[in-house]
Length: 115
Image 1 (spheres, rainbow, N blue to C red):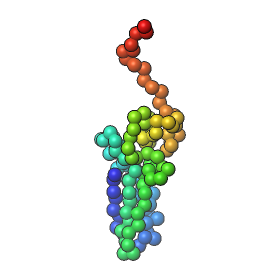
Image 2: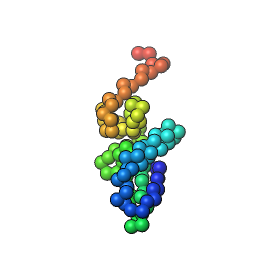
Image 3: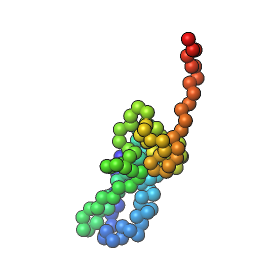
Image 4: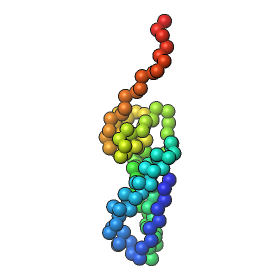
């Protein structure tokens, strides 16, 4: 799970570059997913300020009801959209993140003959 720590004087300044910070985290998660088969599609941004710390979820889901991330089970599939790549539950017909349709199964190369 990627973790990004951002330091700043005031949490009010967080909003100034929040979209850039989230985009950086998305890039980190995509790089990890391309390198590791079961990498998370989520990341965590922590803003450290003089007032304390604030945690912001970044990335593609996770958490309660968000889908993605977590343990991959038999039948789960990876979204074919190159800009998404989310892990999707086997029971779903479309990606929860970008709505790309579930890919059709590939035909077997050596099917068993009918008897």
